[in-house]
Length: 384
Image 1: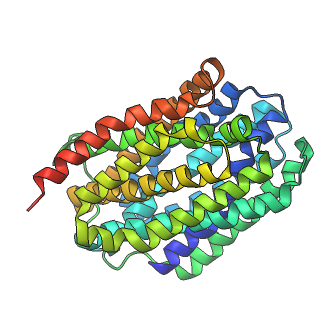
Image 2: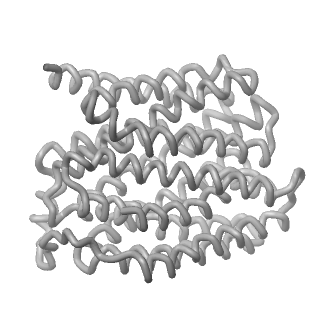
């Protein structure tokens, strides 16, 4: 497990360099707020198909080869992004990056292969911790590399560094990562009806639906967060990058350290309830923030929400999926979640422009309320 988490961490360092500076890079090509959010959606749109495809291919051909292929492709996308030269090229490069980012389903399936059902929430939490650490180191590097007043040419260096760091994960995976010892009997001949039954049975659609609403809310938050910080707090690319460092530290600790023990002591349903309430309250409180102290508080609530919700829902999916279809189910869930990542940014961008910078977050908080209700119902049903 350690080698996989290390590879994901290295890959996410590269991704973390790019994410906080992406809106400002697009602004250097005179992109509007709506165009910037569409740039986020393109990445997610490419994941709709790629998550399902990569997950299914990993069921058939193994996790390792698919991970290495997508890591290499992601590094190439960073290079293209750095030398885009136009807003159109930025969109195309982000699309390629999204195709390769579908490998998250493969990483989740790998962890499901090597962990017991009881261990999976903790395992998914450690995966989230690796993500969080990547978002500590990556944005910090981005802040140091970007400079105080960047123009279009200044964004090439962070992108090249991101590509080099991501590419470093490939030889590490080739030499140290091995196909899971616990290999399920992967179905090479499953027909469409069997795959459909694997995805639609055992309560899986309900969990996927909750994950979709969570993704809609969280994506609206993350897609608009740099622009919100610029509009409400007067922050630029460097300040936003350091804000992501703070968020990454919180997520790394909460997911990597607390999710496993809290799942065992509270149960997944109660932990999900805590997470949904935290995220909803944080989103509905953004209008109260007028400085760095207020930002620190709501960012903590955001991180509690995503750190507790995402691993718990992923573990619930994994526990309901048959062993031979882990990659397929994870891919399907990530593809549906990608629909939320497509829809939320442009809608949030329109609200940002037409109603004001707080409204995308407020709407996201309202979307979370049905998830809060569902988590509360699950918690009551599982009470002793």
